[in-house]
Each structure stands twice: as structure tokens, then as C-alpha cells.
Length: 389
Image (spheres, rainbow, N blue to C red):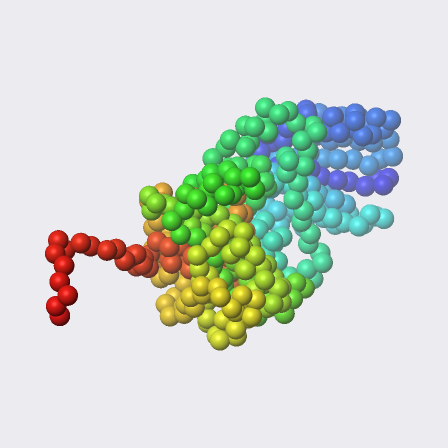
């Protein structure tokens, strides 16, 4: 737009110059706008186009530069690597988003996702103002999207992708998957506590099952009426096992949001697929109805109904201790389940919704590794035989 002014900002000027001014901007112009000519003004860090529009590149780490920005108005502002920019600096820039022209004024942001206590997470993922905690008056003004290296494989080398895959779990989730990292005081689980083996292929399932002493399918029901009932929580369905060395194995997360009959069928399908010895179901939601629904699909299933008589944190702590000791292995990556686990602290669950998947896992591993295990009866020869009473 002729005479429009735009700003690209980063926390440090030196980083902005190295990454944007000298690298990204000229590459984008060369690849996408090769016919458009512009002049670079090194003294003011501005690009000026033939129609009079301009882009100002600025760092926010110097008071003099910041004062110059306060004297200008922009049609758009762009925050690069916003995880490094303070909320106050961002709000200062918003006051400059005031140029009147035919364009709709907008703020654009990119960032490697920081931790969940960052203002970016509050604004764009939780939908609240970071300081007051109040909900956005108009949520439609905010939108976010995930762009991660996996979606850009065509432009990245195999060696680079392998490096990202090999990062420690926390960094891998951030830089490869584009996930915010959970920060919770006194968290019971951390992402580096998850020991992993490869996800189970169909051809390997039978051999793995043969290595297990017991397998259970645990269910945490909800009041969902169907797959589109987004107001209700999901039904947590987790398959877990224990081997002969006493190591717990998380084999599958089959959680769904569906009708009672549909999720009951999903449970029984998991029982059959994994040759499970027992179904463990929480009775708190629905009570006898949960048992009746499961038995209507398979009347012969070995079913144990459990009641949550203690708080979530109390039930979670012994299971978290097993992870801390390295006694639980995940077969593959269970992103939603692991995210819920990392939101548990000694004070309870810190998520916005119910920990349906995590609850199911806790019930499963409690049954396998915490509750007293049945001992098979054995014949013992006393060394003599008598028919007398």
C-alpha cells in the first residue's frame, strides 16, 4: 500500500541484523518478489519501496532506539522471536499500530514456543489477558497456527532433521514439534522422565504380549454424548502392562470422545487386540451405568470397578514415583497423555479440563504396580499323606 509504514522488531538489534536484515529479508525478496525494487537505508535500518511504503527494522534492547519507535505509527508490526520480547515491550509496540490507511492494522508474531507461563501462551492459547487473567472480549481478534520443521522437510536436510529428532525430549518438543513447554511448580512429571521404546508395529505385537505378565485396559468415563460434544471431556482409555521384571509398559492410548456404546466397543476392541486380562473402570461418573454399558458389549469380560475416594494428586504421586525410578516405559509418543501428566503437581491437576487420559493411565498402572497382585495357588507336598481328619 503506497505510503504505508511497517515495522519488524526483535529483542536485540544485533540478532535482528544477522538473522533478518542480512539473511531472511533479502532471501524472501529474491525468491518471492524478484521484480520489486527497494532501497536500503543503513543509517535508519529502513527499506523504502518505489511507492513510498517502508519497513523499519528495530531492536528493543536500547532506550534511544525505543524512543524513536514511539515517534512513529505503523500499519503492521511484526515481532520476530517473540518469546524473547517482554509483554511490556509488546504492548508499547501496540500503541504504535495506529497508521490510518486502506490496510487493516495487524500485529504478526513468530516464536519458538516458550513455556506455558509466557504471555504468548496466555494470549493466543488460553485466550486471556496475561496480567488480569480476564477472557478476551473478542476472541476472533486472536489466531495462531503451528508451523514446524516436519512440514518443511522439502527445504531441510536429512541431517538437520535427524539432529532435531535426537534432541532431549524437552527441546525436541519445542524445536521439532512446535509445542509449548509446561512449567508447573512442584510438577510430578517432567518430559525427561518418559523412558521410551519404539512404537509397536502390528507384526511385533504378539511377541511383546508374550513378554508381559499382565495387561489391563483402564477407562476414565465422561458424560460425552458423542464425538461432537466438545463441552464434555474425552473418555480416557489406556492400555498398560507389567513384565516379569516388574517394569510397567504403556502400550496404547485409545482415548475418544464418543457415545457410551461407541467407547465401550473401543474398550473391548482394545481388550481383544492386546489380549488384556482385565478392564479397570472408574465408577465415579455414571456408576452402575458404566459397568452395564461395558457388559452389554461383552458380558464375560473381567471387569474391576474402582472409586476415586482420594484426590487426583494423591493417586498420581505413587505412579509419578515409578516414573522417577525409571520403572515405566512408553512404547511410542503419547503427546496428549504426556501433556496431561506434566500438568499434575502436589496441589492437583493444573489443566483447564479434566485429565481423562492421565486418570486412565494412573488407574492402569495402579492396578498393575501398586495394588497387591493375586498369587496363583501352588500344590505343596508336605512329605506325608493321611486320610484322617
